[in-house]
Image 1 (cartoon, one colour):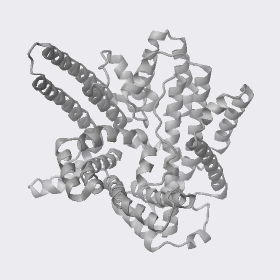
Image 2 (image 1 turned 180 degrees about the vertical axis):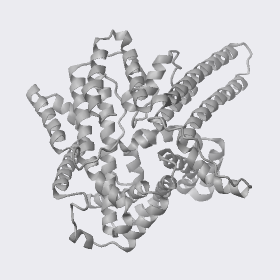
Image 3 (image 1 turned 90 degrees about the vertical axis):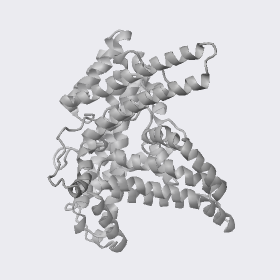
Image 4 (image 1 turned 135 degrees about the vertical axis):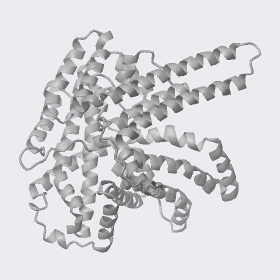
Length: 527
């Protein structure tokens, strides 16, 4: 949707104009109408799933509020056994939350995972004497269902926790769940962060309009100039990996990682830029992930809102549960203050990474992808004391530039392997590609490189390199605390317009579209 000319030529300008001329109190209605129009345009009748999610969250929020009111009234009664009253009403509230979770995850499973689950269950059904294959009904998958389902669940859980008040206006809650910039690929926002700015109807200012527009075109540039240009080569190698040696496969893994980053972060840039125009500040989803020194740090910088969601709604609830607390206490006594809690926290970490892998898709490679990072992060925690001791013994400064560069290079290698598994056409294909890299890695194919047959000629290569240099420089400046967008916005009008015009011209001249290029939908939209 975002990379459709009609969207930028018609829908977005109309949205900004309609919002600007509408009375302040009705501006959120304009955003809601546009959001539902965009969702219906892309998903048609599947909009009923979004409506079902919205209604379930709205009703559960009111239900929780009713239970809270009755709890407060019961606690106000003189002589009430406060602990018993709280526990009784907490159980009632948990049942409501469980109902919301089961209902909304049920919708997600029905649309996204039913076919995969039936394929896994078929051998078991055969053993039980049910020989006829069971086929999943062809329902289709609403746009962004994985994203808005997690957004919806965070709202219900936050109401239960008391961190947000239940919204008694169905329309306002519907806008929070369907705000059109984030429907495609997120970010996964929180009600407490964005709901107020969505419904206040703030004025469109010159600064927000400029910085939002600049962010939009920067995102488009990353996608059209880099991601879409690399797609033909990446697709060719991953689909026909048996025809290539390990060197070409390794290159494809690296280029796919770059493609995915520029595609996903570019789409997020567009979403954040559109939100900025309306003075709605959506959360950042990337923070220079390729500067990371460990796998754990990488996932604190990549898809930040998904990681934060799993941390707040899976990791902490599991690790702070009574069984895990007991396990932590016992493990600390048995294995010490470092390894004991680490061993106990592995239960919560396993849940996070199994869920993370499954969230991305229903294929076995996605589950393997999650377990890959689970094992690596656990190993990192286990060997950290050993690494610190070895560094002290051999006089290695772990904060020195050479050591930091080594850590970054090691992390990049880990990421490239993970993304190869992630992109492969099934787990078996991914493992075969890794085997080819390990046992058949040569540089011979590069000396015989026919760039036109490989769908990546010298012209494409030079454009990609030039754009990646720009991406690196912008990332480096942001890493060191410089807000590039605000800095440009603070310049005089001639400079501001010059930067924007150069960026637009770069997209028009160097964007990968037209003859010889196949349009590529935003890659994370399928998740």
